[in-house]
Image 1 (cartoon, one colour):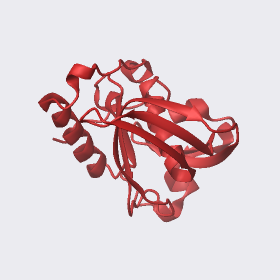
Image 2: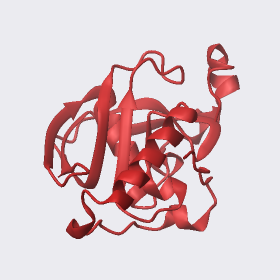
Image 3: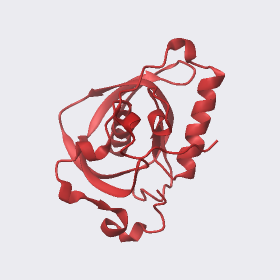
Amino acid sequence: MIRPILKMGTPSLMQASLPLPSSAFNSPELHALIADMQETMIAAKGAGLAAPQIGENIRVVIFEIKNNPRYPDAEPVPFTVLINPELLPISDEQDDGWEGCLSVPAMRGLVPRLKALRYTGFDAAGQKIDRTVSGWHARVVQHECDHLDGVLYPMRMTDMSQFGFTEVLFPELVGQDDD
Protein backbone atom coordinates (compact mmCIF):
# COMPACT_ATOMS: atom_id res chain seq x y z
CA MET A 1 0.00 0.00 0.00
CA ILE A 2 1.32 3.44 -0.90
CA ARG A 3 1.50 5.51 2.25
CA PRO A 4 1.54 9.31 2.62
CA ILE A 5 5.05 10.69 3.05
CA LEU A 6 5.42 13.13 5.92
CA LYS A 7 6.86 16.54 5.05
CA MET A 8 9.53 18.63 6.74
CA GLY A 9 7.89 20.49 9.61
CA THR A 10 6.06 17.42 10.88
CA PRO A 11 7.20 17.12 14.53
CA SER A 12 7.64 13.33 14.43
CA LEU A 13 10.27 13.67 11.67
CA MET A 14 12.50 15.45 14.19
CA GLN A 15 12.40 12.62 16.76
CA ALA A 16 14.86 9.78 17.19
CA SER A 17 13.40 6.40 16.25
CA LEU A 18 13.28 3.34 18.46
CA PRO A 19 15.25 0.17 17.72
CA LEU A 20 13.21 -2.69 16.32
CA PRO A 21 13.13 -5.48 18.95
CA SER A 22 14.55 -8.81 17.80
CA SER A 23 11.14 -10.40 18.43
CA ALA A 24 9.74 -8.31 15.55
CA PHE A 25 12.16 -9.65 12.93
CA ASN A 26 10.62 -11.80 10.22
CA SER A 27 7.12 -10.97 11.46
CA PRO A 28 4.11 -10.44 9.19
CA GLU A 29 3.87 -6.86 10.50
CA LEU A 30 7.48 -6.10 9.56
CA HIS A 31 7.11 -7.64 6.11
CA ALA A 32 3.93 -5.60 5.54
CA LEU A 33 5.72 -2.41 6.61
CA ILE A 34 8.65 -3.12 4.27
CA ALA A 35 6.26 -3.87 1.39
CA ASP A 36 4.46 -0.56 2.04
CA MET A 37 7.78 1.28 2.22
CA GLN A 38 8.99 -0.23 -1.05
CA GLU A 39 5.73 0.51 -2.87
CA THR A 40 5.74 4.08 -1.51
CA MET A 41 9.40 4.64 -2.47
CA ILE A 42 8.88 3.33 -6.00
CA ALA A 43 5.71 5.38 -6.53
CA ALA A 44 7.56 8.53 -5.40
CA LYS A 45 10.64 7.67 -7.51
CA GLY A 46 12.78 7.79 -4.39
CA ALA A 47 16.24 6.37 -3.83
CA GLY A 48 15.35 5.36 -0.30
CA LEU A 49 12.81 5.71 2.45
CA ALA A 50 12.97 5.60 6.22
CA ALA A 51 10.12 4.30 8.35
CA PRO A 52 9.69 7.68 10.12
CA GLN A 53 8.85 9.26 6.76
CA ILE A 54 5.63 7.26 6.72
CA GLY A 55 4.91 7.78 10.41
CA GLU A 56 6.55 4.66 11.86
CA ASN A 57 9.00 5.61 14.61
CA ILE A 58 11.30 2.57 14.25
CA ARG A 59 14.86 2.16 12.96
CA VAL A 60 14.10 0.69 9.52
CA VAL A 61 15.30 2.07 6.18
CA ILE A 62 15.22 0.80 2.62
CA PHE A 63 17.13 2.01 -0.41
CA GLU A 64 17.82 1.12 -4.03
CA ILE A 65 19.08 2.91 -7.10
CA LYS A 66 18.52 1.58 -10.60
CA ASN A 67 17.67 3.86 -13.50
CA ASN A 68 16.21 6.49 -11.18
CA PRO A 69 15.11 9.60 -13.11
CA ARG A 70 15.63 11.77 -10.01
CA TYR A 71 19.32 10.73 -9.95
CA PRO A 72 20.26 9.98 -13.57
CA ASP A 73 24.03 9.85 -12.93
CA ALA A 74 23.94 7.79 -9.74
CA GLU A 75 25.66 4.43 -9.65
CA PRO A 76 23.40 1.41 -9.01
CA VAL A 77 22.76 0.42 -5.40
CA PRO A 78 21.09 -2.94 -4.67
CA PHE A 79 17.72 -3.05 -2.92
CA THR A 80 18.48 -3.19 0.79
CA VAL A 81 16.37 -3.43 3.93
CA LEU A 82 18.49 -2.17 6.81
CA ILE A 83 17.21 -2.48 10.37
CA ASN A 84 18.83 -1.01 13.49
CA PRO A 85 21.77 0.33 11.46
CA GLU A 86 25.09 1.52 12.77
CA LEU A 87 27.37 3.68 10.62
CA LEU A 88 31.10 3.50 11.14
CA PRO A 89 33.35 6.03 9.40
CA ILE A 90 36.36 4.62 7.57
CA SER A 91 38.02 8.04 7.50
CA ASP A 92 37.07 11.69 8.01
CA GLU A 93 37.23 12.36 4.26
CA GLN A 94 34.05 14.01 2.96
CA ASP A 95 32.69 15.30 -0.29
CA ASP A 96 29.76 17.50 -1.25
CA GLY A 97 26.88 16.11 -3.29
CA TRP A 98 23.41 17.22 -4.33
CA GLU A 99 20.58 15.60 -2.42
CA GLY A 100 16.82 15.71 -2.47
CA CYS A 101 14.33 14.13 -0.12
CA LEU A 102 10.76 12.93 -0.41
CA SER A 103 10.05 14.79 2.86
CA VAL A 104 11.48 18.03 1.42
CA PRO A 105 9.68 17.97 -1.94
CA ALA A 106 10.90 19.80 -5.04
CA MET A 107 14.10 20.99 -3.32
CA ARG A 108 17.79 20.09 -3.61
CA GLY A 109 20.81 20.99 -1.53
CA LEU A 110 24.56 20.49 -1.57
CA VAL A 111 25.35 18.28 1.44
CA PRO A 112 28.72 17.20 2.86
CA ARG A 113 28.89 13.48 3.63
CA LEU A 114 31.53 10.90 4.42
CA LYS A 115 33.02 9.50 1.21
CA ALA A 116 33.22 5.95 2.56
CA LEU A 117 31.91 4.05 5.55
CA ARG A 118 31.04 0.68 6.95
CA TYR A 119 27.48 -0.02 7.95
CA THR A 120 26.05 -2.85 9.95
CA GLY A 121 22.53 -3.86 10.86
CA PHE A 122 20.03 -6.56 10.03
CA ASP A 123 17.77 -7.57 7.19
CA ALA A 124 14.07 -8.37 7.66
CA ALA A 125 14.84 -11.97 8.67
CA GLY A 126 17.29 -10.83 11.35
CA GLN A 127 20.39 -11.78 9.34
CA LYS A 128 23.43 -9.59 9.96
CA ILE A 129 24.41 -7.06 7.27
CA ASP A 130 27.98 -5.76 7.23
CA ARG A 131 29.05 -3.70 4.20
CA THR A 132 31.82 -1.27 3.38
CA VAL A 133 30.69 1.24 0.77
CA SER A 134 31.72 4.49 -0.87
CA GLY A 135 30.39 7.07 -3.29
CA TRP A 136 26.66 7.28 -3.92
CA HIS A 137 25.91 4.14 -1.89
CA ALA A 138 27.58 5.72 1.18
CA ARG A 139 25.65 8.97 0.62
CA VAL A 140 22.27 7.20 0.37
CA VAL A 141 22.87 5.16 3.54
CA GLN A 142 23.85 8.28 5.49
CA HIS A 143 20.84 10.24 4.21
CA GLU A 144 18.34 7.50 5.10
CA CYS A 145 19.89 6.73 8.50
CA ASP A 146 19.81 10.44 9.37
CA HIS A 147 16.01 10.17 9.29
CA LEU A 148 16.23 7.66 12.14
CA ASP A 149 17.84 10.35 14.29
CA GLY A 150 15.40 13.12 13.32
CA VAL A 151 17.83 14.79 10.89
CA LEU A 152 16.81 16.07 7.45
CA TYR A 153 19.47 16.91 4.87
CA PRO A 154 19.08 20.73 5.07
CA MET A 155 20.26 20.42 8.69
CA ARG A 156 23.57 19.01 7.37
CA MET A 157 24.17 21.77 4.84
CA THR A 158 27.00 24.25 5.39
CA ASP A 159 26.13 26.72 2.61
CA MET A 160 22.45 27.64 2.29
CA SER A 161 23.17 29.45 -0.99
CA GLN A 162 23.39 25.90 -2.40
CA PHE A 163 19.79 25.07 -1.46
CA GLY A 164 16.87 25.65 -3.78
CA PHE A 165 14.11 24.35 -5.96
CA THR A 166 15.05 21.48 -8.25
CA GLU A 167 13.36 23.18 -11.22
CA VAL A 168 15.69 26.19 -10.80
CA LEU A 169 18.92 24.37 -9.93
CA PHE A 170 18.43 21.46 -12.35
CA PRO A 171 15.97 22.45 -15.09
CA GLU A 172 16.91 19.32 -17.04
CA LEU A 173 15.17 17.27 -14.34
CA VAL A 174 11.85 19.09 -14.64
CA GLY A 175 9.18 16.46 -15.14
CA GLN A 176 11.41 13.79 -13.62
CA ASP A 177 11.15 15.03 -10.05
CA ASP A 178 7.64 14.21 -8.92
CA ASP A 179 8.14 14.91 -5.22
